[in-house]
Figure 1 (tube, helix red, strand yellow):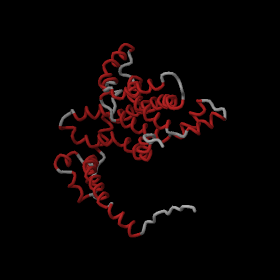
Figure 2 (cartoon, rainbow, N blue to C red):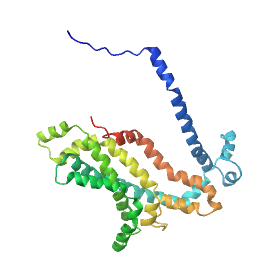
Figure 3 (cartoon, rainbow, N blue to C red):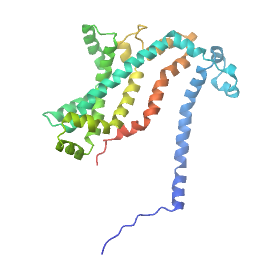
Figure 4 (tube, helix red, strand yellow):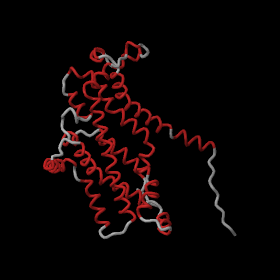
Length: 296
């Protein structure tokens, strides 16, 4: 006698009741998202208003004259870009891209070695790399600065590239190793039977399959480097030709009341590219961070 299993059916009434029970969650999340958006909306509105209006009226007063062209102006953005933010934007881009590419490239090779290659001391080395994640960044600034001073590279882009790469490598190796280690071993075994060496397996199989976690770390590292102030200040300095956006924004904020009307526009110049990058690649973010955390 063969035992049969029946799949429980979900009636329309139960399905409707299940969707109805989730409405409080949806409403709560929507309210929280709306409240978080209000300050950003106010900042965006003020960035397009004239200086005199910003000083005298709140941003909400323009809601009644949204379609009045006299309400809006691009003068704040013109002033901000002319006063150094255009150059700072280019400098930040020049810092961020190599600071993302270098640690991802090194970490991908290291993660593959830790996950699929067998060599003496592999586990000890991996534990050591993971342990570096708990070392505070601030503890390494002075020793690294002394080394840079000895080699006369302080105030150059390679100095900050290497610093960001070093600070980002432990997390990158940890994430990528967990993800690559969770890939089916049958794929690697089949490639070995076909005569593929480790580099071919890594380049043709592992990298294409690891796109979610690579994109996830790329987003994380890019946002970290783009919004960094301390590392850029220490290793690049405050010279106008090497200033990044965070340093330029801090300098603008320190000019006093006369620069207050420019801060909203400056803030949006600073955040526009990170927003584009995050929303363009957000589908990889959670997927890449959680992949490999549970194997099975």
